[in-house]
Amino acid sequence: MHFKKTGLCLATILSSTFFQVQASEFDDYLQSKKIIDQNFKIKQPETLNEILTVLTAEDSRTLPIEIDNNTIIEQFNLYADRTELKGLIITPDFAQFEQDLGAKEVQKVIKKNVVQNCNIFFEHQYQRHNPYIVKLQLSSEKNSYDLELKQKDCGIK
Image 1 (cartoon, rainbow, N blue to C red):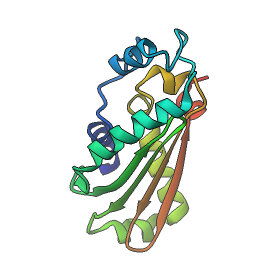
Image 2: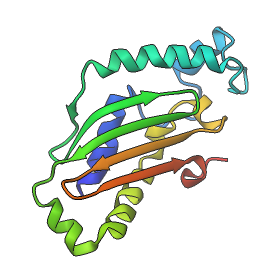
Image 3: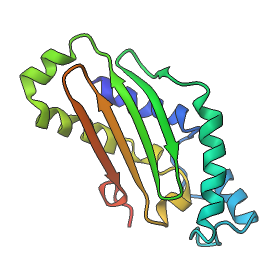
């Protein structure tokens, strides 16, 4: 299904690499600045949000971005407690897919494929060791799909 590609391509947008059990370079940087402690707990949420705002602004210059032949990400924002993504489903036959399955089932399919890419959305240890969610809004011609990916959905915490 095309949604698996979507999740993987979101990694590019978020400047992600693959799953890391160890701290990422970004985690190391945050620890060196005492923004998070050695257990990855956020100590300075305002400072972290300032840094993430700058990163969001820098990365947003590449938007909108077609992440596969089916999805365009138009907006994303990074915060200390969440990531927000908004995009469009541009698959020509998606309306038929929605009609065949129904909106609730389509939402389940999208969620299942997003969950399979948890390692991308929770790349950094500070995202795993503090309350953190990913909010994803994908719109098709007929419907809007709002998803919330929580740590527990990914077996974290």
